[in-house]
Length: 241
Image (cartoon, rainbow, N blue to C red):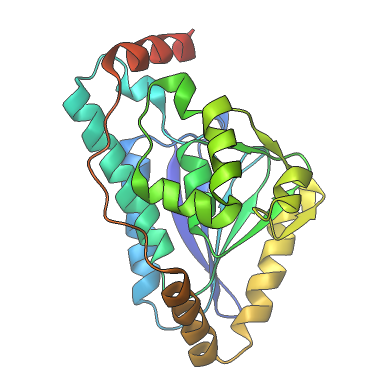
């Protein structure tokens, strides 16, 4: 059973750690809810000035645990994705800078989580993408907004239409990653950035986050997630084999 935990580090910053290593850190319903609760708790902690989100071990996260959704009616699948979106939004709405420390696979809801961070430090082994077309999952407007902010409309469409993955260097070239570092140094490098941010004026840094957010505009209101029942069921069965 995986878990998501928050650890406050010395120096005024915190880590949110996703740990489900046998399954490439995919998150089931309980873990998404833990992620939301961790983000909300850190948002209330006036001593935390920056947050790093990381996967334990070799991968960031491969997103939602599809095996948990096998055989579920569409209404339950939609509800599960809405809870996932609420967890990602809780991370995105943290008042302090959020750094995603990405290595290995960063897929689906995991890619959306990384894009919800303010900065992305990426290991040279990373593979990032959102293969919704392979899974019969209809893209939410909120995720589309995040992806277009990072890539622009044309590149976002290419990634979504083809389902292909970005490697670390293409992610850097296209503006998805802020830095590429050796895979084994991602957590350390992100922690160093968080430490540096935590030493600065919290009022100035938090106002900078708010101001940039106002300039780019908020994510659009979202319609409920939905899936193509036949395509999604077949994709889940392929995933389970």
